[in-house]
Image 1: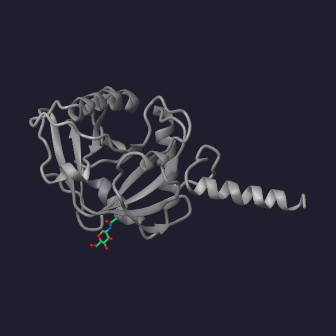
Image 2: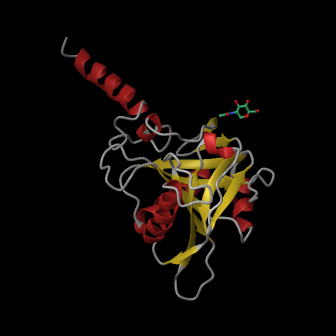
Image 3: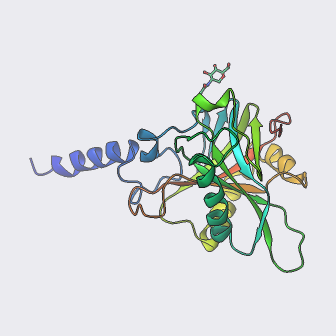
Amino acid sequence: MAAFIPFKLSLLLSLLSNIGFLPETSKNDVGIFPPTCNRIECPSFDLIEVGNGYEIRRYNSTIWVTTSPIQDISLVEATRTGFLQLFDYIQGKNKYKQQIEMTAPVITEVLPSDGPFCESSFRISFYLPKVNQANPPPAEGLHIQKWKSTYLAVRQFSGFVTDYNVGVEAAALEASLADTVWSAAIKKSQKDETTSVYLVAQYNSPFEFSGRVNEIWMLVDLEDELLPV
Ligand SMILES: *[C@@H]1O[C@H](CO)[C@@H](O)[C@H](O)[C@H]1NC(C)=O
């Protein structure tokens, strides 16, 4: 009888980790459903391929509300600055004085940097809920970005996003994609000076300490999928 317990336990653990209760202990780099998305709206996507350490997703057209570029030496600080603008926006600081439901993830685009003072440039975006997509409320200083069908290479990690670990995770994603059919299309998307090198997607508020899910996204440029409007 005792011999069955480890098996049952490991089955239970793997079931739990698949539905997102145990992301902290899971060693997967992909395939975790963010628990946040049970509570608030997240953009849906199609899973195209699950590879070793990465997954390829396709998001159909999605609409994002995006800050202007924010210069900072810290991604964490830039995200905080940008998020405060987006938080005002959803609280009604927009042209229609409309309150908007919170969604996930909040994404931080890391833009190519050419500044002399180690500053980088970031843009922070909020996924606009479906009910608002037909008529996105404009707001000063914010931009409505419409993604056409977009392919992304994704790696997940848990815990808190820090200025140190984003680089490590992005490098790990890039390494896992080397020698795959996707590698050339990702390099192509990074060559353009106006598009992001990678993005960091965060699904949790700073005050949630368990079940945290973050993702590194790299655009897969199959046919100019990302167009600002
Ligand atoms: C995305 O669009 C394709 C083609 O129209 C459709 O088959 C698929 O179900 C859509 N996926 C999602 C997540 O909406």
